[in-house]
Length: 119
Length: 185
View (cartoon, rainbow over the protein chains, first blue to last red):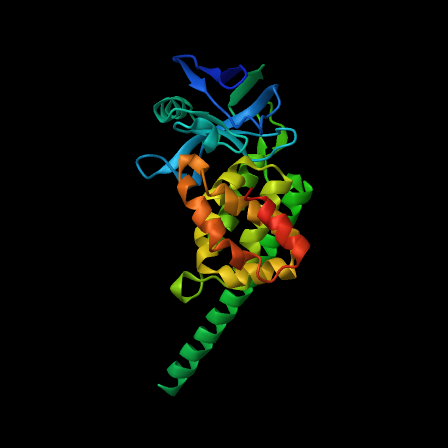
């Protein structure tokens, strides 16, 4: 089982990924006008978004969050400055960290990630 | 020989019928998924078994299915990268869905994908807006989102508003035009 904890401040936050073998910490961002509720999201999954590409031209790596109240199809995915402009509700982190987290999670599409968002 | 030709013709006819049935079936399936997703019904269509052995609704599988429908309809099906009205209506429905459901992924997809489709189908999109006014607000919103999404194309907005934007509203009445253009303010 894998856990991602997001501690949000006013305009950005800190995302920490925990797995049995790896801990990854990075800054994270979101669209300030489309902020998803702070709670615990169970059964999240590492997956890809087929209509968006990463810098290598492959489908964008992401973490899917089910059951987000007031929203749908919410992900943690890559972004670049200006980070908030990459989000319509999703949480955005740097690409290298996103790929590192994605690669650490097995299996993909596995409902095996818990995402905890705290304000 | 005569027998073989007859058999081949019959096979071809049979194949074309199968294709027609498959296409019709897929379309019906797609519309069922689109409407079910908007209404949050039939959520047990896509499920997975959790670690306790319980069957649970799988919104990730549903997203993948919606993504497949979206991807199929976003591709032009007419010469010169033009799209049939049927495809345009499905894509524009996705804008409506994305806005109504606050969909992170589809709002982000459309912020990038809708503008090129609009520029190749300006008259048709305006005509669809006139026919289906409930699609006006969400689609004008996604056209505006193109300018600045992922930090790109912001500098192109004024030129678009001054020139191409008038074509969007050409078939609309005054209230509808105001509603659409308010998204570009």
